[in-house]
Length: 301
Image (cartoon, rainbow, N blue to C red; front, top):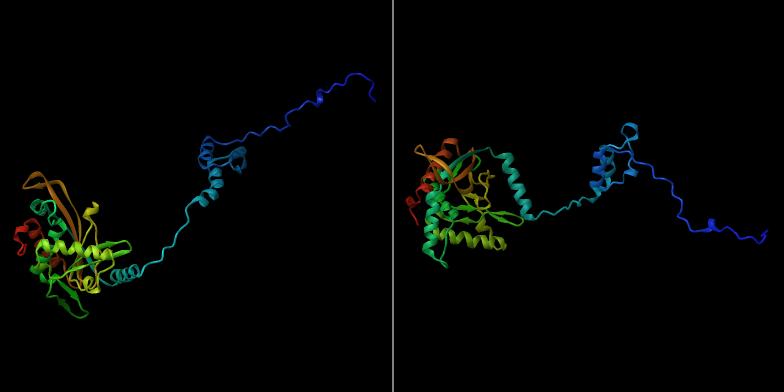
């Protein structure tokens, strides 16, 4: 009962709610650093270290789930009919055709100089040629000089092709196609260049007819424009050879005992051993070297 005396109301003053002290988490310095990087709350990590201490492995285990979940999901892209055809044909070649490779390096100074000279003569709006255009013409002439390479395996015989029809590998968004330059040994460098560019545009537009990309007798695949120095290519059946061409680059080279800077280009020929032996392949590359290093020897243009 209240007796009239003043009441001490200090116990009614607002006070902060009681919170028990947070226990100190024992963790190694590496575990703390890793927890910060992974966004892991150490208070929720199961400790396996000595004396209940959290070690780096504990943090990694705790962060494995969330980290994996944050990775982008895999995406399955349906293969186009072109990609399926490429996969089937190249798998067959890889499994059924005995192949070997021949690699050599050419002095490309002369064809680079020829390309520059033609470009200067053509002027700003004139028709230009590329190193690849000149190389294609050299390949065609070498095939005419060494016709045994311009051939195909036919089960129980070797068919030496009469025409020199050179395929040119063209990259597409969903695959690869090889427009064919018919009678390449009878065309000038300018004609080959114009035809290659026109067919490449039509290939990327999907407008080539089967007659324009089948029936080649030899293929050239050039990745030099992507600064690829050297690579090997898979045969384009039923052809017996394909030439993989790397970039033309100025490099130090020993010539006649003297160190010089020279334009050099590496090429690798993939050969069907049923048609082409090592010596024959080497003879073709020697003939090709002669035209690459002395393009003035070309019969046409």
